[in-house]
Image (tube, rainbow, N blue to C red):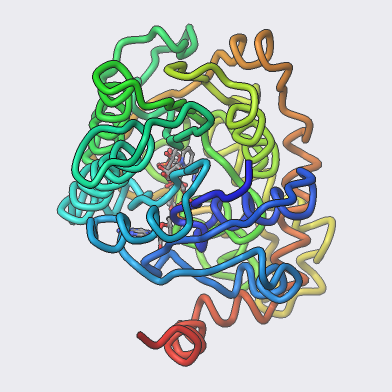
Length: 365
Ligand code: NAD
Ligand code: DAU
């Protein structure tokens, strides 16, 4: 693979993926990161990579919904692969404002598929000769499968049953990606992954929110009864799974990716508190004012339509591609909490929005 287009590479998983590709996967080619830099996109996540791999890494500030731009990028760079992360990703935001989710997650995916069809299949507007040595990987979520009861796990054959505007928009994009394979022969793969955690996670999501609130002695909000279950995966394991699928996956195939680590939300929050007690004991943290971290746990109003339980059966990727999660949850949480404690500059910039100023300076159009 010579040139890869990564969309949404300034976000949480995308930036971890780009780091993984350059630093761990032995990639020797060029990579273009197309990102609109919404509130969730932060090029500071990759400032060291941009310096170190200058010449092989390029950042383009732009919207995946911009057909003209996406088409021009395909023409200019002759991509051999696309790894599509760009999305509106936060369920709570989709409940309060679904429009951007429909725009980016559905229309944006459509725009990328059209550009890939033109460039790769010999069909569509401005098409060139057909290519077989290319791949379009779509990064999706386990939330498309809906909510589980007390037993069972999501398989690749589980019927779709999305229940939030976020998951409905991701389900739509998955269907479009599959349709482009069946109709036009576009060589696509899809991964449906469970909840990720790790460095560079934007602090609106449960784990980074709880870490940063706890460090500052603020309440740790737990929705409802705290017994909703998620299946947690360390972000680098997800990146390794995507890389494996991109290189060895079968076109047209979907792969479920999960952490084999189902946990109730309340237990996740307690694990974060335990990791903090180990790394920054509450008596040594003046923000705690004599409390311990668990004292900060506060049950709050539930998320509307809150899915009860997710769990992933990842037998297919394990058997066919030899992937399995490598980081156990307790070790991963300790690494994650340590990362937030040792990167106060990143935390400050994200919390104060200072990275926006840095971004305006560096990426003025
Ligand atoms: P994120 O919100 O941290 O990052 C999203 C990135 O996409 C940001 O950099 C943002 O600027 C960019 N973006 C948004 N709209 C864009 C547009 N119109 N054009 C170009 N760029 C745009 O998200 P994440 O948590 O890193 O998730 C990445 C992908 O993985 C998403 O597709 C998400 O659905 C999927 N996913 C996430 C998880 C998880 O636990 N976070 C789990 C499974 C799947
Ligand atoms: O399952 C994969 C999905 O995981 C991804 O597709 C999404 O992009 C990603 O955001 C994540 O969705 P969740 O809604 O599961 O993640 P979040 O961190 O928002 O919430 C995790 C759980 O914690 C969920 O049950 C809601 C709960 N929660 C969340 C927040 C922000 C709380 O109890 N309190 C909170 O303050």
